[in-house]
Image (tube, rainbow, N blue to C red; front, side, top):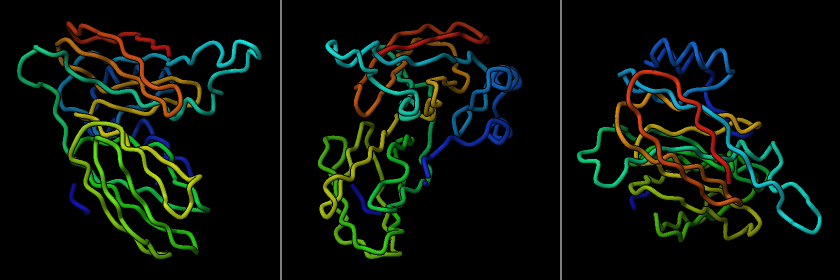
Length: 232
């Protein structure tokens, strides 16, 4: 791996639509109050939208909620192509994103990017930080990062990267590297909308830092809007 931002809400719906989301996807998303992925593909297809639901309870003894609604905004929804479906039809290119270190915390705590993206880690604290990751998707160590300074890491492999600070063990963040640009973060209520997909066989994944991952298969056959809910 080559060394190369308050919560990180997805860009607003209209700004995404101007980057190429077709009119059908835009109209549907406006009605539902949903956002589209940061980089929209050029060709129309099926818009997947729905809601991600947490488990009913986390503790059978207390019945306490597994994940409050405010934490569902940390759910990453993304698409992979089914094995054996032939040559990849889902495009994507790397972008530049930023994670700030502020008040001894990562902001945002969960970031979804396309493979080969560069993430800038910017120290906005008055103390030093020392970032590292030891996950299979990518290992790196940035060393001491002085206040006001930043460094970049390029994420070349799909997967979940756990980030930590050697000087602040309670701090943690996650960079979810997706194989294409068909990904998004859910809203606080768990709603999501993906860019229009071309015809094909896909797997829809939902990942959460504490709930893990759930997935469902889907067949896309035309240009329409498909309600597609997911649950952990």
